[in-house]
Image (cartoon, rainbow, N blue to C red):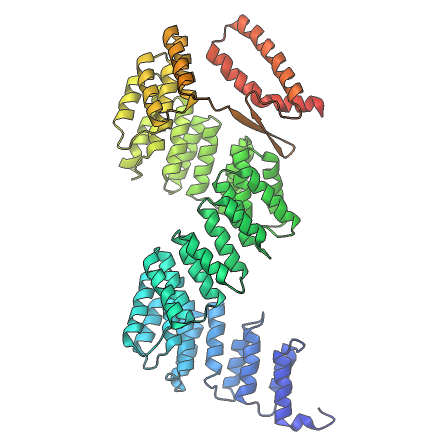
Amino acid sequence: MIISGLILDGLAYGRLVVFCALSPRGDLNYAKMLLFEMQSPNAFSWNITIKAFSESTNTHEALLLYKQLLLSLRPDNYTFPLLFKVCSKLFLYRMGHEIFGHVLKLSFGGDIFVHNAFLHFLVSCGELDAANKVFGESLVRDLVSWNSLINGYVKSGYAKKALNMYRKMKKLGNINPDEITMIGVITACSQLDDLKLGREFHLYIREKGLNMSAPLANALMDMYVKCGVFEEAKAVFERMEDKTIVSWTTMVVGYAKSGCLDVARRLFNEMPEKDVVPWNAMIGAYVQAQRGKEALSLFHEMQSMNVNPDEVTMVCCLSACAQLGALDVGVWIHRYIEKHNLSLNVVLGTALVDMYAKCGNLAKALQVFVELPGRNALTYTAMICGIALHGDAQDALSCFQHMIDAGLMPDEITFLGVLSACCHGGLVEEGHKIFSQMTSKYKVPPKIKHYSCMVDLLGRAGLLEEAMELLESMPVEADAVTWGAMFFACRIHKHVELGERAAMKLLELDPTDGGTYVLSSNMYAESNMWHKAREARKMMRERGVDKTPGCSSIEISGNVHEFIVKDKSHYHANEIYECLFQLTKQMEVVDSLVGFTEIEMLKNLRIISQRLFNLNMDDTL
């Protein structure tokens, strides 16, 4: 251009600036240099360069260019929307207002294009009251203005205000909603679970022939899914010509959260492409359904597909490990977090504490807890429940006190952990005190699980009359867990009369529970009431009730092995049963020497059975 003299041609020079600013093969910094060397750059050249920087990683440079522009030129109505966009992107609230001062000074306040850009800036910064004030005082409004405020309210969770704004717009009668309006109001219906109004908007869309874009269809599906109307969501989904990843994910998440895991998994498998969100939704759904093994299996599949997990993935998988007692996998996830420098925030840290505690490594759980940079009530709750699980009542109470001293409020799960600790430690007085303080001091109303803990605590301590009195005076109806705790205590302390009452209640709740019949028979037998013991067994046979086989699991080298009573399908079954036979013989010898009771013997057998497979595998590997 210099040799040919085109450098003096303002039009050609301006086109070069545009090319360098907007072309994928251009150079933004070179465009800026050309702009500064241009003899008389016009507003168009400045706006193009500002626009290019506003969409780049060096967004702040757009504001510096604006300051340079003011030294030699008057900005126009295309300049200010670009600047408001930058301020929205960088959350520069004060700068945005300064620029609006320039708008008023240069008499652009009546320009609808500039006005809407400022309104959008306020909404993006969460300044909805200011946006509403500007909107109300404005002499110029169009559909874009209304949409900005409607969608702003929706994104901030003010669904009712969004719908009120929509009704005001409709009342004027001179502005017709478009698909952007519909996305806003349908999302508001989704937030309010207002299926009736959502259906009315869907009908309006069909009657007016509005363009059913992917975002609008996704909003409709989300509304139907959250309102539990899956057939209508499915109908919208199947009519979509171009299904986006959001469309697929909406359906997968909806079915997964509703418990329809098989349908969710089928849709998940059919997805043409997946990012981390649907993977997390599916893994999380398995965890919620207590199907931790499938959750971890899907996590391994996710890794094989080279999808990078995020914090949500890690939390879900750690919960799955906690369910299964899969310590090796949990340790691997912890190392992955450290290796990839994922931020160990309070959510992820709490999940780690919970996993280590439930997988039996309380020392590591405490280490993670202590080293966390921040702890909230959930973190303390996880630690308290973990300590309680390991039977250390005093440490659990100490951790609870530290939580209170830190100014954190316990919730119902916290109290469940503390009461459980008191139960395991036999701390009746402390348990009574904490149970009383739930309502009197902390305003947390006890639920059925808290009453169950108290019944269990009193029952274990032999205070059976007090336990029964509490059980029968509860403000909520006792469930099988509560009556089961009472029944177990009666059997341990050989209180047949109260035990019979508890057993009758259990059979009323579930006549098909074989365990109740078996335990009733055992209770009678232990009290030498052989006739009643036979009657309990006979009743069980006559009603065709079977006892559900017990199931236990153990993790070896990252693999979780499950065992069912009398099951011989395991590939090491012969070795396992031989080992069990030998251990049983040894225990019989010990029993004859030290005089264990039958119950103590059974407890020891359960402990041995949990360790059995590990011992056997150490010998055979």
